[in-house]
Length: 485
Image (cartoon, rainbow, N blue to C red; front, side):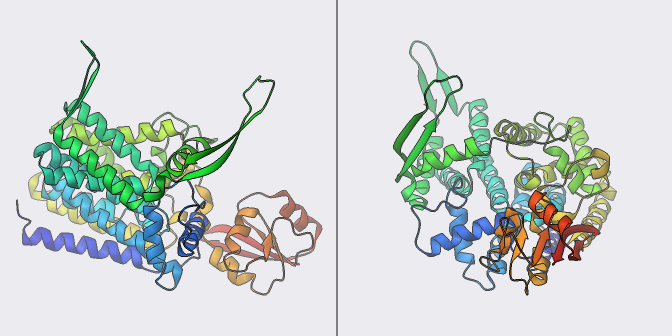
């Protein structure tokens, strides 16, 4: 089914505006927390260190390869962020085609609008992290998967294998998509198991071809994934009399994958709502997005149960399994992971268009477009600081201290300082601009940076010394206090 000229015009307008918002004032901040780590990984790649690159060690290399290529664009902050911009707006295009495949033109345009102007999606499309890339690969992988279900051709098998491998090579969190596809394949009997008379595993021939393509692409892009790295492990079992030490060579892939599922599994929160099994992270969606997106999400759920189209179950299953896997992995409480699933929440929200009469559906789309665009423009460029009016009501804490918003002003303020006392996390960010200037161990600094991270040394020094205070704030929120002593 061809796209009409009217549909093309609206889609192009959405894409252009989504690109403009993601590009506008892209250097408004210096590198934030996660961005600095990615930048250091990129520096290691630029030095030729591909075998023992331990920055963001728990991630496979494709995202780092891409950021390394974009880091050649100056200034480096803009260059690397452009990678996320590209994948962010590509996700907008991709969700249009997936939603159109499922439900038709109007739902597709509305899904593209919700994705294009989602506060969460925009933020991580302007940030040097992997979530915008994952969001794109999540969408196209499921697009190719449903194409594969309809027409099990060699072409569709190859496309499914390639997209799945690329997504997994960006970040291990893409395993959520792979596990979901495996479950759907079992349901659709593309994979089945027989226990009698002998145990047998059967895989559809074309699906097996997709798996082979996945493996080939994986090792082409990450040929050193099986490179053994010497690893020293200390085992101290509870109640054991002795501590055992193991010195062993472990393949990079297993070491990195194991790190992801041991170190990250330490999520802690004081929020009762965030602690709710499975749906805890969903409350970030409720406090970060514009009300019209939130309202239409629940209207979309209503429309799904009222209309009951054949693809609704697939859509709900993809979203439900994402939140189940996120809860099982018990990753830290941050809304960054929602970036991956935002396009699918957008499709659910767009399903609400079906409950409106046909003669006003275009009016509804136009109103949503205008309101979402205004929200996105008003919230920027410090999207990390934006929370809607539900946040204080639901008592959801701000995530990750604003992702380093305000560091650019801190850097400017301490330009003439000879030594800076601050928390180690902020020293890490300042180090990029002034190597060796800031630390959490300086005894007689002439400047102190106090942020949202509590630090006893910082507080004690400020209380004992007469220092001139300077406040750095944005969106009516105090981000940093600079003390010059």
